[in-house]
Image (cartoon, rainbow, N blue to C red):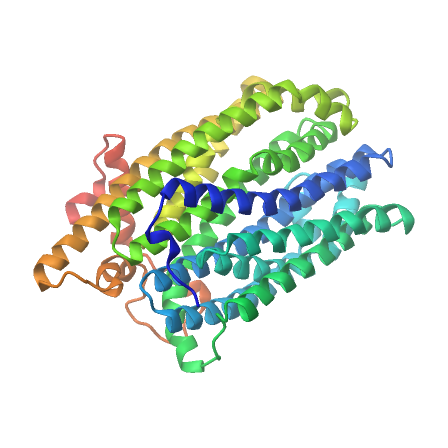
Length: 511
């Protein structure tokens, strides 16, 4: 039986356990991605590494949609469990999983059709583009597998079973590691062999996660059409903004890839190595955003607002300490990294620059991850969207453009780091402000009703209504549900952020 295990005990311990177990699983998958490049580099064609870099940019986009959907599932399930509503948790899990499957199938079909155009958009040309396309034609159809696997992994973390969530990804990493050399070398499939191994790994992750949710935790209810239609609004209230939030990240990454592509495929090859090295090195920080969400969600459901704020503080402290340690390790191992992947010339130069000067600024990306997790689990998913879209656009495009103009390929990385600093700081300030606002609403409602045990539904309604459609038609499309925020509400969010930097929003006069 699922229990709310995060509403008591040490917050820091919960963060460490959840993050470390999730990080092991995440790192396992990305280590195998890194091995893909290593094995392909043994074939002696630098175009292969560049092709994986371009393909990874497109694959990152599809995976990010799955992450957004899994955030919604995790937030809803953890909140229900924190409020001791187990049957509601089962119902939300099943309906969220169905939504995840449907959306991922539709997106996979669209991406598959436009693979050549998408690769051209990020700067791939000639033989490199052909290699990247052959990789994606195999990998993209497996998108529903990994999206559903991530959603079920999020459900496992929501009930506090981070260990099984970790095991599922470890199994996937093991499958990929075994089949990579078999398909790449034994069957002489090259880059296509790497894609086939990745598909098998995704299937393995799904099988293990599904077994944990269905068999171990008995969290799957029976499908009910009326319940499904009723749950679309709360699901998309989080999933819509969360998908937009997470899609913004690969869009920003695509902007950086496109800017680097202007300097040649050799730099893109170096960028491809960094694209796999970053999640391996900072896997704990990627995991932190997923780990802190259930902790915040359960304590929010249990009305433990002091613990909600402590969760935010401890997560940020941990993020800063971890990134500093890893940045030092990257600095001292930078030459070994170049040697292992046989990077030369421009590719080697880019890796050296990142490990020496840029890696430490991942602190600000990490704290924004934490802030976004707080937004998603406190009923303000639109803030995640606002910050991530802002970072991917005004926090990336102008900085990368002028960085490339004034500092060449190194300026691209510097520009990206500057955008991360700005939005990371603003995101954290807004997260703390939101916790105080949620606490105030809860206290006012408790005073008004005279009841100490205020239900989660009463407290969250003020926030979730902002993300709901005024007309909740069961025929509403997913696109309509994703456009739930009215113009007035957008002004509210923008004005609150503007206040953080001392600017009075024009829309405030209408409030």
